[in-house]
Amino acid sequence: MTMGMHERLLAKDATMSVVGLGYVGLPIALAFAKHLKVIGFDINAERVALMKQQIDPSEELEAADFDGCDITFTADPEDLKNAQFHIVAVPTPINPSNQPDLTPLLSASRTVGQALKMGDYVVYESTVYPGCTEDDCVPVLEKVSGLKFGPDFKVGYSPERINPGDKVNTIETIVKVVSGSDEESLDAIARTYELVVKAGTHRASSIKVAEASKIIENTQRDVNIALVNELSIIFDRIGINTYEVLEAAGTKWNFLKFSPGLVGGHCIGIDPYYLTWKSSKLGYHARVINSGRYVNDAMGAHVGKQTVKRMLELGKNPLESRVLVMGLTFKEDVADIRNTKVVDVIHELQSYNIEVDVVDPMASPTEVKREYDLTLKEAPDAGAYDAVIIAVNHAPYRNMSETDFEALMRDEKGVLIDLKGLYRNSIKRLTYWSL
Ligand SMILES: NC(=O)c1ccc[n+]([C@@H]2O[C@H](COP(=O)([O-])OP(=O)(O)OC[C@H]3O[C@@H](n4cnc5c(N)ncnc54)[C@H](O)[C@@H]3O)[C@@H](O)[C@H]2O)c1
Image 1 (cartoon, protein in one colour):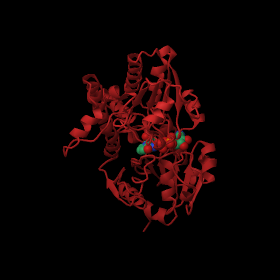
Image 2 (cartoon, rainbow, N blue to C red):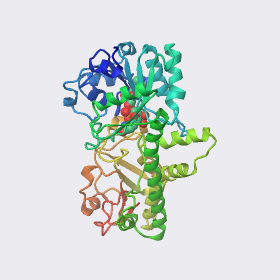
Image 3 (tube, rainbow, N blue to C red):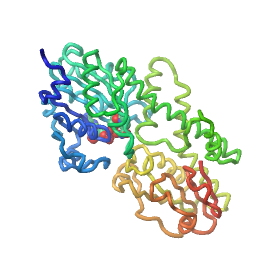
Image 4 (spheres, rainbow, N blue to C red):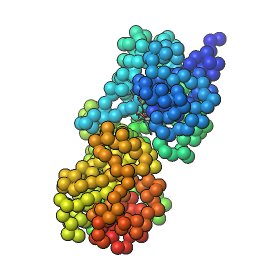
């Protein structure tokens, strides 16, 4: 009897490749490489060179995580011909018009297509709209390889749920949704993932169901955050603190715990656009999801305006004011600056000709310069600012006291803008505002 794909992988008679070694691809490649023979491929040769030295360019993993792994890192697409089970984990961004940009995904599909052989498997992990794997990627695989989807090669989709910076919810501990193009591939893909996902797999009934499940996880979060963001705009006008209202409402057993904030990063603020795009192609203009996106995308400018308003109330002239923004990354305690909405706050302040200084203990100054043309300051100036915005709750900021903030202010009439309401019970003298 011929061995199935899972057995062949286990016997190292077949090799796995992981295409795209970023936040998602590298951890999964290393996890599999503890059990299987793996080829880790990335188009970025600089990143590959780092990984060969056991350095994770995304700064999530330690050198020890590479120990005991049967993995070869490469930037040469030819090497993919030695693999039979391909996992694709490349970025799925949006373009400036908020529409899906499938360039990396289709390019990776071409790369895999040129290496595809009879009997191979291709499993996509990138977040996409339902239908993308079968309608957009498979035709590329077929065209480039000259093989026929179904009889010649099989496809699956298994969305990634990891949360950068989170050491509790990891590949091993989160149930993984898996899907395949037929019963046999579903079984082989599920059993292969079960090697590394201790929490087990959920076998979705189809590839489209698996794709949709991922996109709604993030859409649900986005819409819920949009609701509390809108509530925060309303409560601001009423003159009550949103966090205090949420605390009170949160004592009910079924009240959902979401807090207001900037929705940045490359997942929650982006994935819903994949779904609304697909929906509009099918003739339905998604109202709730798009409203949520609209509210969340406007929060950075809202924070900027509220800062200016508080400064004007204190008689400060924006043209002569300096504001310090503390934290630039898309969320706390990570180095990731992709799609950070703190930039919207900065741009709003700059539109009033305010001089803005930005500090961040996690972000790389070179990347910030390249991505946003902003110069990160190494340390804030003492006694220099009219307002300080705590935009991201990085660990070193969490223990700051009112005296620390006062030391940063130009005079006693300073404004403290605290997006996450962290200091709301401890600021007595400065002018305080939170979402
Ligand atoms: N980061 C997360 O927390 C997370 C969580 C769940 C899902 N996702 C999804 O997973 C996918 C990957 O995200 P990520 O955060 O790992 O991205 P990333 O930017 O960290 O990494 C992507 C890697 O792919 C490489 N790459 C780009 N184009 C390529 C190509 N054509 N061929 C080979 N390699 C290529 C890049 O050089 C980079 O190393 C996206 O669809 C994302 O939405 C991410």
